[in-house]
Length: 126
Image 1 (cartoon, rainbow, N blue to C red):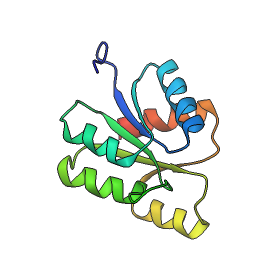
Image 2: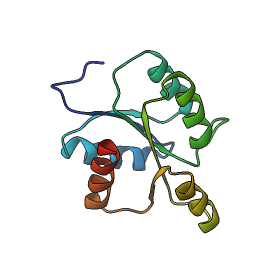
Image 3: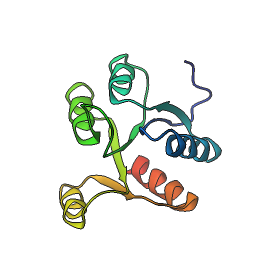
Image 4: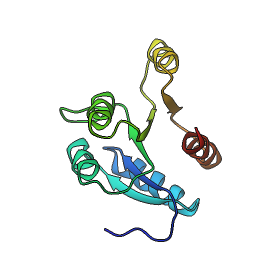
């Protein structure tokens, strides 16, 4: 998979194919390169490959043995400086508070296109 130009590349991980498609289309339209993944193990393979990535945007709640939190832990073990941002529509308010207290980048679903765009710009700039 080759990326074009010097645009930031975002690995997008979501097990809901419709949400994943929406995220990647929007991010592509905003000028980012995207690599969509529906499975955490696939995302880990891409990260481990050494492919240049600027950020990972992952859903928190995913089907399978690896959710977004554990995916992030495993990514940070091999690429500690890679930015990781989380998104979810299913978190309890207390969990959201913990995410924010930990300093994680978090975007609650549902979001609008402009909200996603501003979130990703801010995340990449942080």
